[in-house]
Length: 376
Ligand code: PLP
Image 1 (spheres, rainbow, N blue to C red):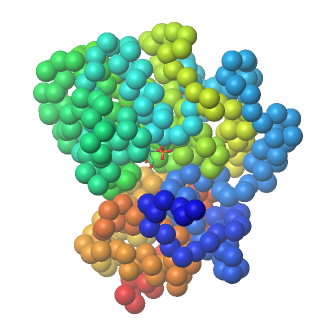
Image 2 (image 1 turned 120 degrees about the vertical axis):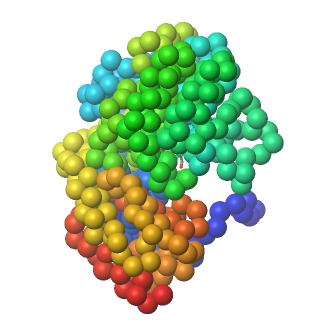
Image 3 (image 1 turned 90 degrees about the vertical axis):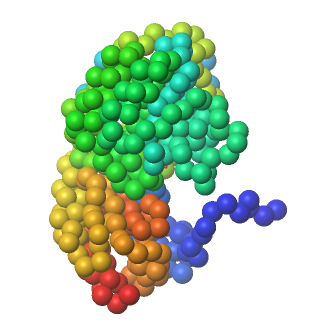
């Protein structure tokens, strides 16, 4: 049987990884500045993480959500403390798309409404419910018209108010920083206006922190730079360092009823052991501060380099924008300098390194990047 051929693959086969380094099947070492799409938060195969997962598997790997799971309670309490959202509740699922679907579902239960406002260039996942709030024609199928969605421009609060005033809006969903759409930052004023408008019109403010959250920008959630508190926050990617896991934080204004949300695998023991180990390492190694320090250094050093039109982002969520197709630059970085990077569209290299990236690794990248830019 063949694999369903939906991914453009580089001809590299990783077989081993540790920290910010990956080795392929020929023994070649790579520097990882992409973290499997922002998933590797604490670095690959951290010994504490490996031990926690291994020990948990030896105790109990899975049982259903029909009985108490103390690890879920421990995780809720730990996320509450580190994020400053201790008064919110946690619902656990398996991925970013699922978290966004659950958030929108909860918003429509709560308000009794069915409209959603989302933003151009946003990305919230590939499932039918999550992709419905994305306006990229390349990934939206006819079946996706499951919500009534209106799209506005990021940072245009006036157009959001016009849509809200039409009535029937259950939720406004916005990314902490737009990732796949090109590292676009919402302004403080815009986020504060969204908060005020959602309260005024009785709509739920959903913050998608799947890519921008979990310490990546130097705060636990990116929206904490903007000085707002949303009603629901969605999480995924870095929460369990590669073990599939997602979740949503729900404000105390929502009332849970039995059966309202549910999942088979969400919050399973292995995912919980992984997520708890991730928080241990984030705290012990002060990775949120590190992400901010190393990311700020990268941004400062890369800004103004020839051929670079813009460097955008916060912490270790950075977009390097060019006025040209970046495919040849990215290939050279991978095959000649052995550095993994990501993209956002045709003109942007996206860096989503593990939060443990060191200053030395950042310097290695800068030197290699300059060499590639001078050669190409
Ligand atoms: N939301 C954002 C902001 C994302 O960047 C992504 C994935 O890239 C998702 C949601 C979907 O997450 P998942 O692929 O885990 O479903």
